[in-house]
Length: 240
Image: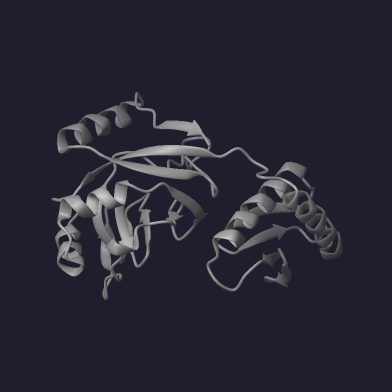
């Protein structure tokens, strides 16, 4: 896949594969990020894959731009020849849909003409690739949602979205890992802590991993929430 290396300030570059959100570009970005991480090149400080690019932050006093471009080119050659450069995992995330946890589910039902149970069924029926993490620490931007349940964001964002809220924004779905303002339509909430600054690593997943949601009742939500608080809950994962 063709790419451009674009300046991003004085201490970073963006390796761009496409100007649009593109699954092929996203896959390439994840592979390149994995190759770059595996080399542990002195001077590279941070590697950030997105839907269509990879931003590389570096220390120009340790690594010159010319050398960084050479490393990037070598990693691109390796990335082209590999199916994936890092192992990927599937995370099973419990969600209590509707009610006080999903205040916008009724709105989505009115907008789409679908029964609320059907909206939930269509939401849990897909496996969602994590294309990038951003906006908030640990916020996963997920692609692959059934477009029949897509709805526009709120015209006026809410001042506070509870941590764990699962939302729909246009054709995407995602989870708010911490309490924050937000404009996505809320359909449910998970008791799982997707981001914990005291955990190593703080974020459960990385770009390239996958998420499957499954429904739980309010009673199950409360039980899992208690287990999360006591440290006895472990998210189910598997290699993909």
